[in-house]
Length: 125
Image (tube, rainbow, N blue to C red; front, side, top):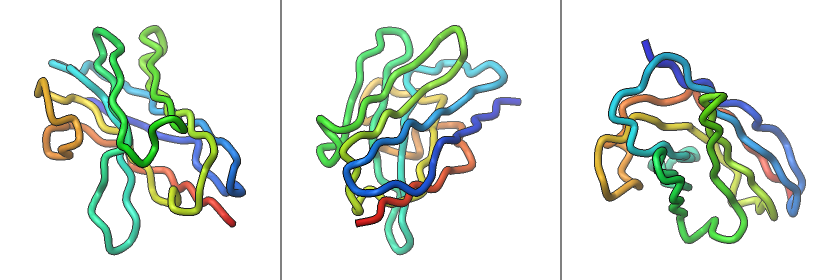
């Protein structure tokens, strides 16, 4: 029923910017928060950012603080990840996650019920 479609990835030079989008269809129940994760070959999926749907309070991984901004558009049922000052180490497949049912520990993937298909972000040096 619920689908998350993430998009906006691409090839960018170091220092550049990209904006990822995640469009949600269907009704997400108990959607306390939505988030973005990323994954590279040989590594586990890591937390990037999360936003509490009701309040708009945001949370970021230390690696992206000051460079990435997560936001939401309630009318469009869409969450965004604005990425700036991109570094080669930001290269990964980025996944949108929704349906978080907890109040804490937004960095735990298993707490999310829905996932996008992933969008590739490649940052060249």
